[in-house]
Image 1 (cartoon, rainbow, N blue to C red):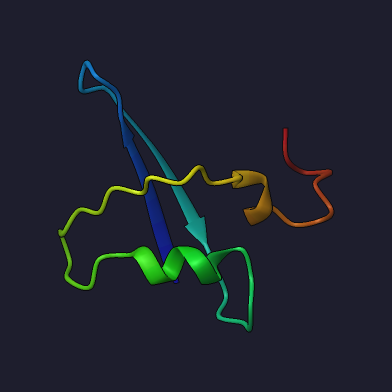
Image 2: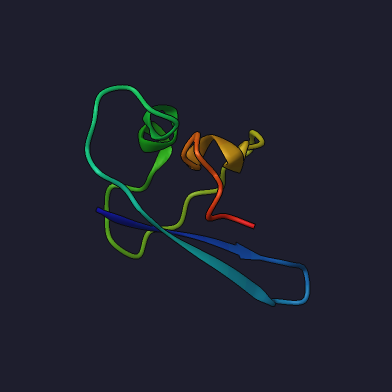
Length: 64
């Protein structure tokens, strides 16, 4: 599965991060999946902060 996180600032500038995820049991995605839109193109505002480091593997030697 591929997921895109899109953030727009007040000036309309976009930051997009693509994440590849393999389906598994509970993961950092579990709570996030519950808030995702059900229809393609639908937008959802997430009011709680998300710790994006939870989506990275434990071995981060290849990440900077």
